Image (cartoon, rainbow, N blue to C red; front, side, top):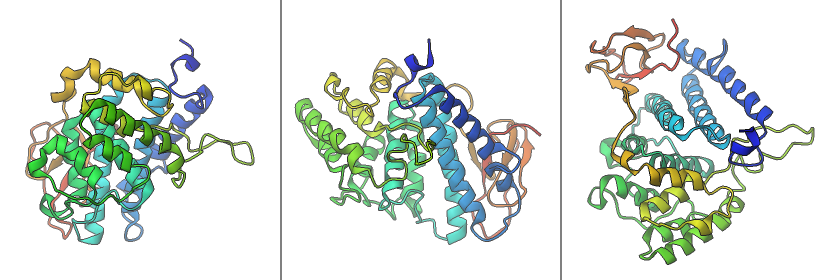
Length: 336
């Protein structure tokens, strides 16, 4: 099939898609790329933390781009774990830099990061990667999993579906009211008709109310005719709500180009995957003292130049530093 027949939004051209994929490769893995610099000693305090944030966001955007281009959903399901692992690496560096494990990876009061978090949570549900949601919760919940509890009501509504209401927190506080209040109402209504009404209102306002984000209108060329930063506009959280609420007929929402209707359909068709992880090793991180879950190259933010090769089953070492717990991360680049 031709590219224009499989792409999921009409703003994406094949050449732009190919150029952006090449750009991600260079930014992440080039000779002066983010991953190379993350392996080198820090030039100044917080430098690695900033690089890790950039690397996580680049991976997230690459996933969005691939979905927008019409790539196979099964492959995106596998790639999602690498995105979460990248945010975990960023989290470990935040906590090292601030010496405070109550710092969150996604700031609830910053619209761009809140939107990013909602999209990531939505993808976990739609791609049947619920196993990743406790790891995302660990990035937000703070020390002991309770210190930041109840920070945002919509986040809590989603996490109830993972942990159960008895293990989450009651709150009425919404950090981002517009456009997300209607999403909250949808998640708490008691009939499909009411739920769909609220979801329709949410999607009707979604793009307009997110005008303050950095990616808004990125499909439009600038004054020089150049396009940049567009990877797709998607309300994955709306699709996740449809799935979690058990709404069978979502056709009234298909009029919104940013509603991921084919991903919702795929999630329904593959419901048996909801309690399964993808085949092969699923842990891309490992605490010191635990056996290596996968043979290959690993590194840890706890020590500069830590990258080394481990055999499966080999005990991962700890470093006696002020960093705290040593967490080893799987290196996506498995060359020597």
